[in-house]
Image (cartoon, rainbow, N blue to C red; front, side):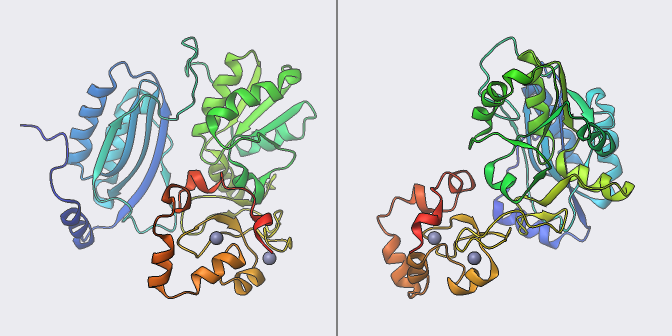
Length: 347
Ligand SMILES: [Zn+2]
Ligand SMILES: [Zn+2]
């Protein structure tokens, strides 16, 4: 019988990964293309990738595929050949993670989903087949010199806060699904302009570009591979960076510096700072920007109140957290950004 799901325990799998002698590379890729039978596509993909000892998390939907995987160096070429042999994935951009030990996954999970990026679009006439034009770093810089161009940032507010393209418009919403109609609304009088959408890795702005076209915008572009790819291309080609500050990413560094400019302010004292951190109080874990001085003053906490809790013996801290609505206080990326601005919390 063919194995379509993993049947070994998590602990055993993790153990196996750490004993593995071969180095692994973490790769991410996505592609929007029509998949008529996502379940069949998923099963075929699982069989092939399982044979190649690929680990990771992949989503398959009618609109395409989104993957974050790791592969042994020995199987890298075979994986690439397999993927490129699937017509719509031929020459798909494989983003190699830098500063990575390849130990991020120890099992292969492929899930069929409604969408690869949840968008809240209910219009049956919407399709990802008509997308905006890709622009690379050089073309992006060129378009930005044109007064007829508007740039739209399709990321979250805390990402925009520490770094963005010069003159980029922020769509002030906490979720991508709210951002889409809001972007259309905000750009209503700019339908004849060049509209460039961008995001961190390209997957969101590519969908946003299709949505703008669907809503009657004519000259829509999106930054290929997002800010990550732009920074890489600009560096390699020696182009000036039109992106200022830091590119926020959810890894241990919480951001990659693109230029030396610090465009954000410490949420506690207002001095220039762009280092995101999570409040050290385990009952809070708020994601916020803190300067070095405040980090020292508050022991890495978001407020004097959290600092007091943080400095209690562990047992007492646990006692305090009992009965507290954990849904609001346990760290959660999605919830962290919905918390009110912390300025009011500081005495
Ligand atoms: Zn500060
Ligand atoms: Zn806190």
